[in-house]
Image (cartoon, rainbow, N blue to C red; front, side, top):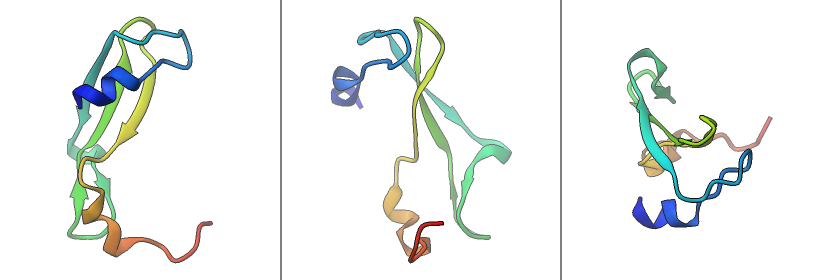
Length: 71
């Protein structure tokens, strides 16, 4: 994650050094089946409060549930 922070830049205020990683859990987890879910992580700019990036840490767990086509 440290290397990721060094390459990140807030598209809203231009900040490139003041971020925090936050986790969204509970009922707000990313769910891709009845038995599979993961917490959703957010990279937040501490200068303006914008969510710069949202992601799951183990995308390989969701691979077997991927759609063959995009909507």
